[in-house]
Length: 370
Ligand SMILES: *Cc1c(COP(=O)(O)O)cnc(C)c1O
Image (cartoon, rainbow, N blue to C red; front, side, top):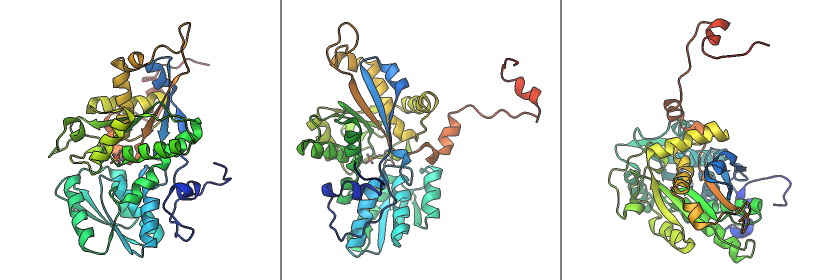
């Protein structure tokens, strides 16, 4: 992008978005998140690949939901709405609450009681949303929001709001702008399935404009206990520690399948153990702290790599038998690790309690004298 100062995804990608010159843009300067090379993940897979992490945790409220929310709230204001409402596994409510506060609107959020990460709840509350914790799961919460917003004057800002996906597709634009091309593979967690749909749309729009010469295969990953698309039926009681993708009946189910089929990709699943392994690996070997649901993308990548996917589909590309350049793989890390301190602590060694002296420390670490 040529702009000197970044002022959010709407001003950066205006010509791709349904906004006019008079649209009252509500922004927190979201987007422009880093595409971080992942040498440790790449090493796990082999010399034929270059893996990058699109770290969406660095958006203003700590998740990719901000890309969609700047659009949804801007259009709500433009249409004269004075309140927004959403169901949420956490990040949508944090984002809706922040953008509503920014716009001076009221915000109502419905969350599944007890299954939302602490950081996300704190955000919704401090931004001043009216928060209802329902005795049910995300799918119950979304059903209530659909009913209320159909009948009463309040704007629904879940990803079934079409402006959400419009904003979220800009993540694909940024990846292409940085790489100068689309990657060959795009790994992404799948919950309500809006984001995989949005990224695929973004890649296709750049391709249609001739800004990239190829398209990625879309590689979506659900959690094993919440994998309705993989299993081919609604999951009544979805279960996973990755609460952001704990969804049994995705709103964008059909669109996600279309993204998979059109791109020649897959939608598959990973276990909670595989998610935690990737979560810890990213933190300890790449220095990148994402939330558990985000690690599903990298968990899927590592699982496929171990099954030989990249050697089967791509002949060796370096060394004496090299045939082409490296395979470029992007994994989206959808949310920041600080969202979910409880899981971070649960899966880490505990602090060691010691008396306040040097000897006590030296009992636990071997240090060489100067
Ligand atoms: C919302 C969310 C997801 C799932 O995205 P969908 O568009 O619902 O598929 C994944 N990870 C995080 C951190 C999220 O907040």
